[in-house]
Length: 115
Image 1 (tube, rainbow, N blue to C red):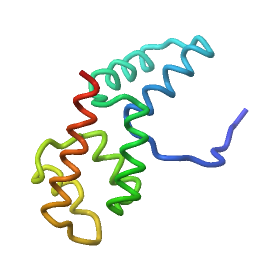
Image 2 (tube, one colour):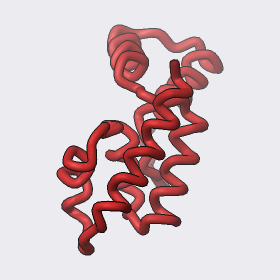
Image 3 (tube, rainbow, N blue to C red):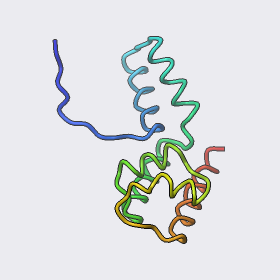
């Protein structure tokens, strides 16, 4: 049976981890690919899934980032304005240095919550 994708939404690594863990729990799926993917997502997710959602929402609404750019910022969690600038350089508008610092401070506050 062929299934067609009706719709999709881009998600961050922490959100993907939560979704995949829920699917594994619900359906009891286990495979090498799933285990490798879970290992990767656990290792490289830098914030909790609920924090990732909040960060993405704030980055898009307050700072005007495109959702996909905000997701990449959350996945990478840059620690300096220069690193952040490299990621958001795809955006159509320039960002003030103070906005970059604010965003990095916001990311750092969420990073601290993870431990």
